[in-house]
Amino acid sequence: MNKSKTPGTRSAAALNTPTHLSEEAVREISAALNGLLADAFALYLKTKNFHWHVSGPHFRDYHLLFDDQAAQIFATTDELAERVRKIGGTTLRSIGDIAKHQSVKDNNDPFVSPAEMLRELVADNKAAVQTMRNAHELADKHEDVATASILENFIDQAEQRTWFLFEASRGADASGH
Ligand SMILES: [Fe+2]
Image 1 (cartoon, rainbow, N blue to C red):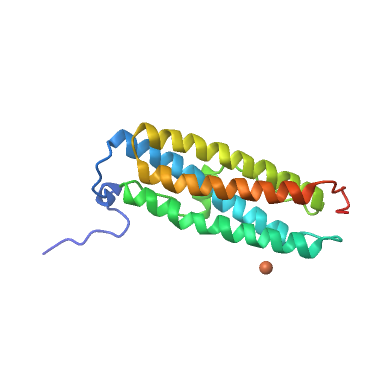
Image 2: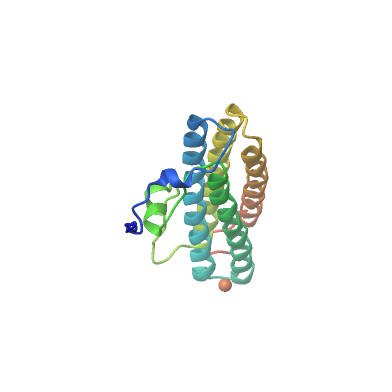
């Protein structure tokens, strides 16, 4: 009689997608992409948090801007996770996993002024650009052109978000005027 395996006990080796990349490349690129994925989820939720809690005279503008940006960030998550699986790595599995891998700092303050929201999102998006540039360098080192190509688009998007946030923040005082 066949012994059936207990669910969840198969090793991750069963998930090794065939790839031309070296084991080292898969390990390094997967780690970098999983960090970016955790940051994308964290920044997505922070941007939604600000979308939900922004107040003041520019409410409509900021509310809509944050929603657009959150949607753009969320759209990157599936591409990042599936890129990891395409090269034979494994990716994040839970909110706990995100918390372990994120470098973006959460903001759980009960009140954040609009100017502070804009400033914080500019900093987070700028940091995301740098992290993606580092991952791009790693992809180049291992000649993983597809990962590099995905990151080039995501860097452009993050730079656009930074631009919009920066322009929106010009002259804004703490009350949002
Ligand atoms: Fe909404």
